[in-house]
Length: 316
Image 1 (tube, one colour):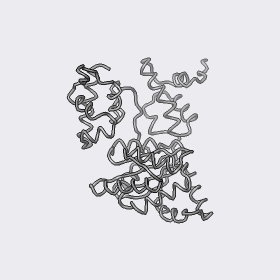
Image 2: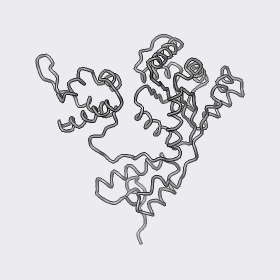
Image 3: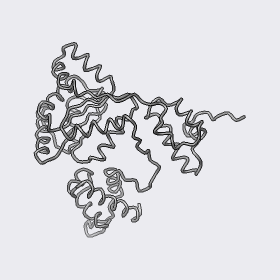
Image 4: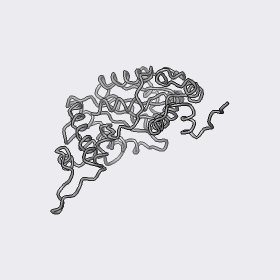
């Protein structure tokens, strides 16, 4: 990485810190870049003195800055956010929840952009939004540890003690005038015991911290099944979230927000036939868009087929 690129990264960093009101210490904690390295880098000094020798600061720290501020110095072709109905719903639900400390369950179909929209919201609100992705094998301890990592909060002891530590830190943030938010993505994988933990967080933090569960309709089916079986804590959990359930509109598989800039009509028809949701459309189009730029060729159905290793159209 040359110094011109490093200068661009640091310029972007300074703009980001100013826009998001981040101190140097806050950014060091968020990014993982050592504060002493960050101090040198912000002065456009890209080496440190170690044992009497000047040692160049490793490129990985510049990449860590790029990851944190979502900056691409290579200016590669990127997926542009489209204001689909689902996007607008997600941003509205997340904004209201963060401002007022709501507990919401957001339900949407696979590939409707739930994770993508959430990540954009987090980029727009980098302070005090803590997202974790639920895994199918995660236990209570696993998920509490994930929250601790997201919050950069050391946790120790039993799950109950960890939960109290998290609650105490969230309340501290609120007293400091912040609007904290915890998001569980892929929440259909949550187990009964963890849902009960979220109920406990709700009871202690409602109005002070937004609690968001994001998933497919499998999550609602699981919650209702556990409630109907009178599983421990589940009727109480359902009572608290019943009127916080938000469902996203069905996906428009004509993809009108995405295909307006594509000139090749055959490509449009191909994508509308082959792709079932926004996620599949992204996976089919983005690599082909980058290949089209690399080759300086138009984006066509045959180019997309080539990139996806599908048979080309027969020529007459």
